[in-house]
Length: 146
Image (cartoon, rainbow, N blue to C red; front, side, top):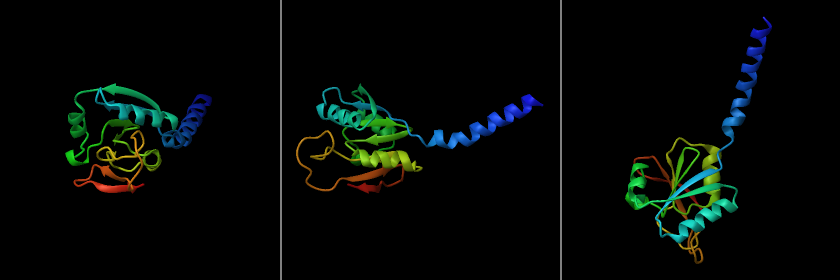
């Protein structure tokens, strides 16, 4: 009887703690980039400065990885990151990444196409708001404007 009560109590504790554990997003990022790209290293540094643990993996198959992730060619970013089950493509500002991880929408991920000047990891001054798109819809939808 005591064993049954103990296992029931343990189950109840795990069940009540599970949502708190599940809500805590990962801070681990795997970033795939072209071997010679320096701005991608800049974005990796930016993520590290914002509390992420980043593993950089050089690859010559970035376009193929992006297509496999469901990113339309016109929406590909400079590099591809995997974090907490999501794809993050390009120089996406950390505010949008944090939003993605906290809200956990049912999408594949988000992308900031191209290499916008002044975006995290890129040189120069920001000249216009960054439009970040969600990945996973038949047509990418605007996720955020920063």
